[in-house]
Each structure stands twice: as C-alpha cells, then as structure tokens.
Image (cartoon, rainbow, N blue to C red; front, side, top):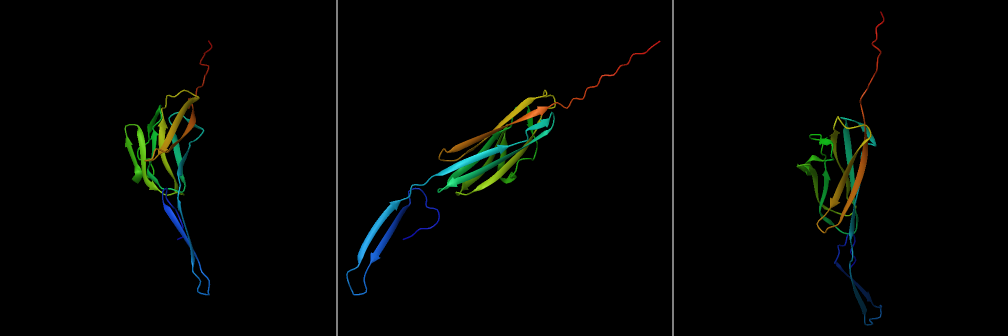
Length: 173
C-alpha cells in the first residue's frame, strides 16, 4: 500500500512486497509497517509603516504560514490594540473571521493544512497629542490547540505635526 499526500502523526503505513516467478514457485512475501511521525510549525510576521504623523492611521498587516506535515487545529491570531492608539472602526480584515473584545482583536482561522498561508489586517489611529519621536509597539500572536505558537512585533515612530512660526510684531514710533 502506498499512501500519497499528507500523512498525519500516528498514521500507520503498511508496505507489502510479493515476489514470484513464472514457473509456479512459491511466492515470497515481505511486510513492513511504519508509523508516521509528523509535526507542523506556525510562523507569523507583522508589518507596519516605520513612521506616521501624530493623529494618523497605522495600517498593520500580519502574514501567517503553516508548514510541516500535519494539520494545525483551532488556529487563532490575537493582537492587542497598541497603547496611545484607537482602533479604526471596520478596519479588521478579513471581517468574517475577526472579532473584537475590549482592546483585543482575534481572528479565528479554524483548522489549517500545511502550506496554508494568508494575511490579516487592521488599522489604528495614533493619539494626536503624541510627542515627536514617540514609539508605538505592537505584537501579534498566533497559536493553536496543541499549544504551538509564535509572535511578531513591530514599532512605528510618531512624528509631530506641529508647525510653529515666530513673527516679529514690533512697531516703531
């Protein structure tokens, strides 16, 4: 028996070989079994702009990947809305798998086969009063039912939008 495709951890593969001759001799049999030892891995990479102005939107993109030879069960990505920002309404994509409770965004991706990859996204607006050079750091996490997990962080610097000018208003008499 030859099995093609994904063989999950613990699957028993049996191989039978039969040798016989064309002269009516007694066939010889050989039987071997192997138990599949497979695993999977979750990876995640978060990206955002290097800098934005105070009061501007930061677009976060989170790429995920399942590799290996085994199904990843109950995969979820979570992301806490960063300090000094506000979630931009309706920006969570894909919206069908996204939910927001408090300040945590969760994407429920379900069971994923090896080779599954994708991207989830959301936007947050920085506080308009942030000082020039402030850092907004954000971390996304991916995990699944067996406990495997991964995390990725990104930092965006905030620049001040203040435009100051000094003029001389003296009068001469």
